[in-house]
Length: 290
Image 1: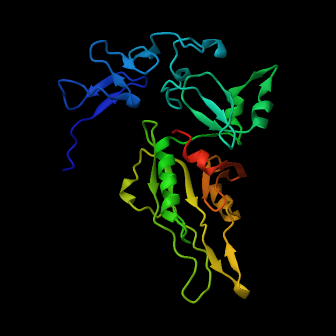
Image 2 (image 1 turned 120 degrees about the vertical axis):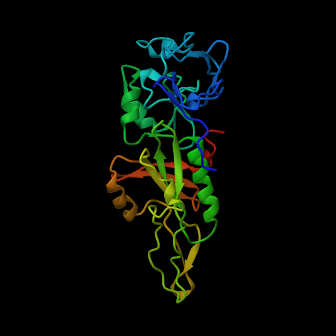
Image 3 (image 1 turned 180 degrees about the vertical axis):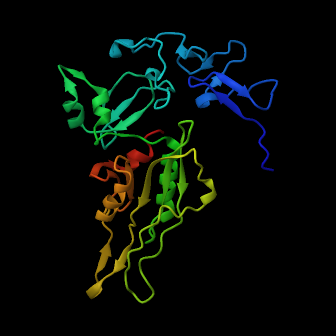
């Protein structure tokens, strides 16, 4: 019925601030989706318990030797605006999903990068992971919900000529999501002429979903795997990689990573205004969190 039933505010490291609904018992699942034990008030993060008031784990990280200089009990390197810690390792993967390196930070983040980036970020046998992450050829893997929507766009496009896509956003709480755009127009007109019918990613299916709290987090669109008839009984294929127009349009947000989903050759292209940075195996990309 549109009436807000409950609203809870959290401090940056997960402590409750206000319970607007005045509930007698707060929900078990809350901050970043982790369970809060009613008896101990600790967060159950799987491998370790977490104390919301201090923003620290209650036991040391088993991988502490791999990142000396940090406390054994820190949460996401004290950077809750950029990092979450679901108890996994930050993995650096190549375009086929092979593990190149991990930083031992227990922040559960995955990155696509190249062996060359890791080698160029290594000094005296030690990898400077901050340098590797800052390289334009390194891209943080989107969350599973965003990848699910990207995979759905490929399914929706099927073998047709119309493009599918959407805007990736980052909400004020750090979570990510997708606003799907309306399906692009058919480039093949009834008279047989072919026109530019690139999808308009600003033309959303549900424009009312856009909120001021959203920050742009990139976008994606498919390149069709269908063909169009050409001269002398020939057929034309779309180029799977990002087009010059795609690269040019990225000038609006020059540091933003964008994606072209190309089922024609089974590749996910990651690009920005400076060009194509990575070409990821599509089956690997879609199953990276499974």
